[in-house]
Image 1 (cartoon, each protein chain N blue to C red):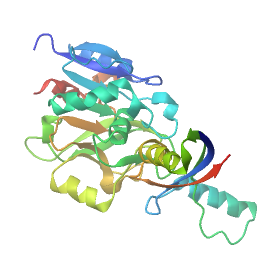
Image 2: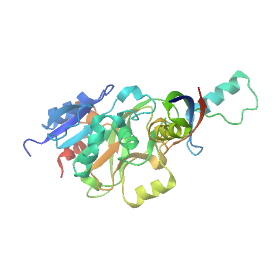
Image 3: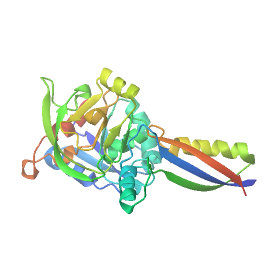
Image 4: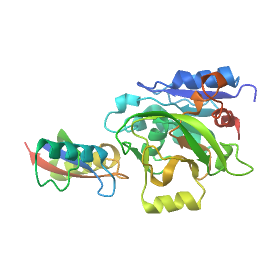
Length: 221
Length: 84
């Protein structure tokens, strides 16, 4: 695993790519490689992070244009092979727009852009993205989004609950998300999308380390 | 080849809360407009497109609407088509 490399995707308008890379390299001593959105060769990365930001200026809908990039086209095979993909904030929006995760992210209920620390309940340990093998845990992570209200129909919600695909729920739902959902996984557990930013919670001096475990778990098989 | 002007309307599904529409409704009432029962905001996309007849063009527009213009998890769409 010495050469384990995390690909950090850079779209025009991504703005958390360097934060993710800094957290992985500086806090976790992991190797990273920036992947330009036009690249479709994923052969030399072992996991992928779709970082936050405003890919393609959030034109049309958040994540809608990114879906048609060469990189996202190549992601299907990567995901099917069981490799891990983490979508943070705009990355989560891209994963829902592309159909890797169900539902959609729409404008916050109060229309505010919310930039705050939030408390989250870890609901499912599917995929091992969160350290909750013992019992229910609460973590604190920053959020920063205007369009983070998770929406899905009742059938999808039932499927999410029944199959334990809900990873994180807000304690005090800040944006009006259905069922307080802040993050979900796919059925296999190798794809996680979440609105909070784990990469901004990797160092005590900048407000906490509750994000470390999730980034570290990129290395899991 | 025929050319068509297409107007696509994309709307949030009725079951999806539209906070921007609610805020605009509230401002409309403050402006003094009376009787507003509901106000929801959508998008209109204008496309000029060529094709061999209306059926072929409808096929292309259906694909665009379904895969790109609208996210059918949260939005409905309809369109009108005019031969130029």
